[in-house]
Length: 112
Image 1 (cartoon, one colour):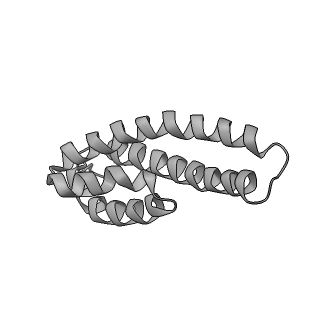
Image 2 (tube, rainbow, N blue to C red):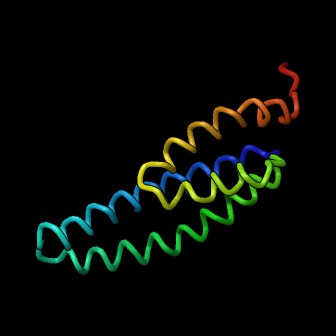
């Protein structure tokens, strides 16, 4: 597996996680605190999170298929983008697990 597959997943996991936390904060501002402009911010952040979550799903599925994960693990990773802060924890666990596979698969270059 190429390192770029893991890197794409990691970037989208962080982006999805940050946007989901931001969306939660916007919704708190809109529904609990009645902050001016929170409704507009909620709309913008929810649209951005929705579209970027689809990109996250594609990259996470690509990573899972190349890593040959079982279906349950694949679903666990795919759903991590829907629970606030879960994407951060799942990303760290997956990265630590796959880092060895990525470095083992990298071609050995001779130093001169």
